Length: 116
Length: 464
Image (cartoon, rainbow over the protein chains, first blue to last red):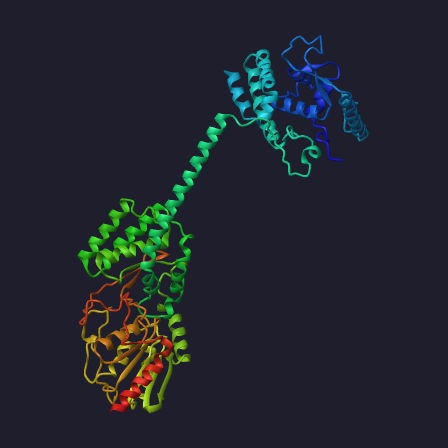
């Protein structure tokens, strides 16, 4: 089986998947959501954002909503993206992998304070 | 304005990305610049943009999308070769135009530069070959052959050094002015020296040497120019790739001791001294060595053949040596002092042979001298003078044409000049053997020269 493009999952792609967990968003919305969930540490630039989106689309982890798919979307000119079930599954397994890592890190007592 | 700048950055991305996400990316930038106002947020925005472009641009180029136009391979192949295309549109007319123009410019540049290189190689190589004989021949340190083996070896390298030794303008100026200065200081014809030196300096200032690619070529070009201006083929500027010694190696006591020992072991390079059938004396002299070391050996050789009816001097492997020794051998061939032309010396009392030599029987015997194209320098003097005095028959090939009448002057570690410091009076003709060699009376290939000489000698003796 050929190696998948997103193995390992780049941090930007993972953040985009997480950003789309709760709601469908357009590019700028994703960017702001990522900035928010990382407390401003990651601000995706247009190049990085859209090249990640392209790969995620190709891999079927997100999908683009056709105009009129989403009644809530205020701006029809923008393209909205939604998490697919494959994307959700991948995001979960990535989170579990990180959780495993976190467990190891805890056991080794290299974490202090609020992470524990 | 900011948007225009970002739009420019976007143009750097591959077409497939711009087509797919160009508008979106621009919209995102627009959104951010609308929301992030003030100095620091704006600064952060631009930093983000630069960082983003730096990271994502190469990725987009190296990470091409999956084939978008080709149909799935099994359907399309159908036992015929198929290829995939990554773009689904033909190039824009402006792109075609720019590409065409750029190709044209590149091809024209190639053509022009190739032509230039070809032309300059042509001119340099023709100049170089003109004076190549002199370049490789005239570096004798004037007195000894053993001392010059290193520079001579280097000289033969100089052709190969063409590409290795490039030249910068400051060095070129220094070499040209050094050449001009030495010429003015040492060349015997002051007026001609001044004229030539001025010409070299003017040529340098006008940039006529700018196209000369390297040191060896510069030496060749300056040599040719000096010779053309003065009409003197003995002037030369020579380039040596390996550094020249501060003083001629022959002048150190160690070198002299080594030279003496070497001469003793080689019987002073007198390879054969024999009496051949029909009482023909045969001397194979491979140099005319230092008389201070080899005078006795030379006299002994001539004494050994003293009763011969004819003499053959075999100089086919003789590359020269000391003028005094050349003259010493010559003295045995006359019964009265003869003017013995030496291009290196003013006419003085020493310019006459020391004839007659006491007890010598050879002054009236027929003499044959064997030559080859390698016969050079002092050996050519022997040939030339005997030929001019009609005292010998020269058999073999035209000689090398190395007069070596220039006195050696060191310019720096790699350049030296041969400059004639005296005007020797040539009683025979205005040209000696410099550059042209000595023509034999009987032209045969060098390996056959001895047989021909023996035949001629025997015929001559039979007639007696």
